[in-house]
Length: 184
Image 1: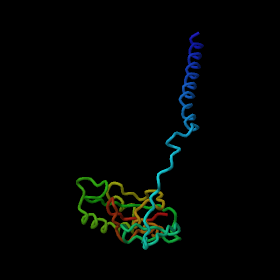
Image 2 (image 1 turned 180 degrees about the vertical axis):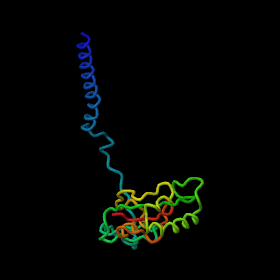
Image 3 (image 1 turned 135 degrees about the horizontal axis):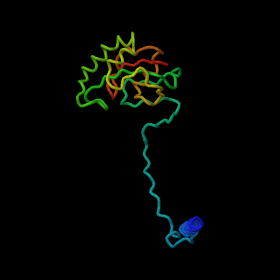
Image 4 (image 1 turned 90 degrees about the vertical axis):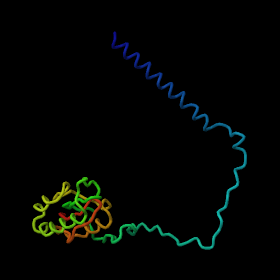
């Protein structure tokens, strides 16, 4: 008997919810078809014309076929058409004070650069071994990196690097200096 009581109460509750939804939704439909009010019959306010100037400045082209480089990314260039859509890279990270996610006890920027430069030659010979000399976050393969994820200057360096090659100098990134290899 309790089962049927529960089913009946559930049905009554569902019907009440539907009735409530229909009742609440009804005024919105009526308002959409209501007669225009007195304020709606009034003329719209006059529009203000923008003043005409002889020189409106340079015309801006919105050409979507070219790569846009932010002026703050000095040294960044558009990727060549032959660049891949994504790459596999390995990174040896050397953080410094002021870099993103750097610990409070991080070394100076100059020290980080010297360590990265010292590790660079070893990375060219045996990248996996050199990874152990980097900071936390260093890895021989960070996985697939698609275009548009990295900063433009860094992206250009990584996407134009030949497969299996280590970039010839440490790259300064917001997270610290990177010694980078392109795996694929």
